[in-house]
Length: 527
Image 1 (cartoon, helix red, strand yellow):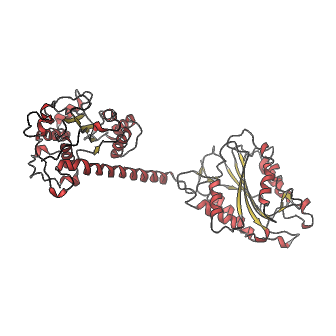
Image 2 (cartoon, one colour):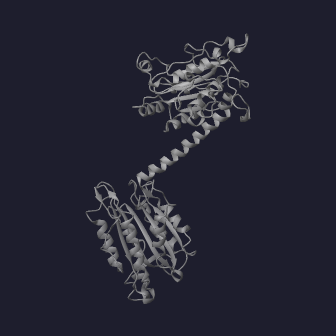
Image 3 (cartoon, helix red, strand yellow):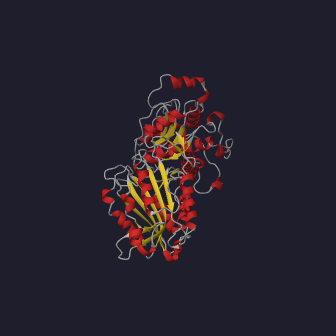
């Protein structure tokens, strides 16, 4: 492992990055062409690529090269035995560019270019690619920061290079020639604007956040062209030649940080979990709480819950057993399939939802204090422990995937399948004494009905459910309690509650549990 400039840690096997930067700021044969500001522009490029993008600066080529010096130095670099096929090479050239009078070719004006014979003494732009032919260089970013004598010179430069594109690295993986051109009409050229725009685009949070390891060169060029500091007459262009897939990753992301990426994902997950929690709160207050209080629409009426003491006692005993050694023995010996579930079932109007709503309210720390326990005549052993239920759901019109996502969000993770949910929940419960407990109301009103919730009730979860006696709820496991008998203190002969079978208060097993309820017709006010 080595550490390059800019703090990027490089593996010996990862692509190496090289920068060759040249600028022609002084023209001995034509002082009118001099551009002293290009010296600083070149320095800006070197600083950006070496300190932020992890490049090594190849210093053999510097300021004011002649035509032969430029081509010979480039050729020597490309043919060196040290080169590898996966090397990433950036060549930055800054100076004057011209389109020949016949309009057939674009040329670069070098330090030895004679203004009296530009056609012969200038460097044809296409020769830059010819220098690379027959070498191991397969990934080249060519940056032409040149000014032109008229509009359209940039397009001619790209066209000259594109004629060689068919011969460029055919069949090579992740190879290609990328040309970024700064079109600057000579009369209006603003020296140094290109490096400034490039630095701002690379450093902009809008280009990319901390997640991607590399910057899209297309996004960078787009950001440069959209910047308010760019002169209107100047358009930065991008040409991609000889690509065998995605463009090579020339630009590393200076903001890339796995830790910040994880933070972003954690924040997104937290926001999603909060949305699920808000949905659960709405379901509870609009569906379950109103049934438990026995009113429709006016909370000022207070609590009118009465009766159903037997089922309350049995559910409270079931929820409160975590610290009981005898219950621990039940968890670890002879626990069969379905023993982690309790199902509350009865006929329409018997008050299943009211029972579950009261149980849920008593387990919620913020709601427990609002329940008039003494006024309702609730004995201590009828009251479930605070926090003994982890999530309360109302399943009507929810799909099985929504149920699964809601359960996972309440447990603090995300999953795609029931198996993944149970596996993650089991890992989470290692070392936890109390099971993860879920209360699901209106289970038979899923949209569409599905066995998802039943599949979720494995040894890693416990479920309390309520179902209509006439529904197709899972086969009840008899216990000592009966929801129908406990629903009304004095059932009326011939009523639906008098014919309901014994409450299927299903079994429960370590280390998690789930409480579900499926609801029949909306019950009338309980009073």
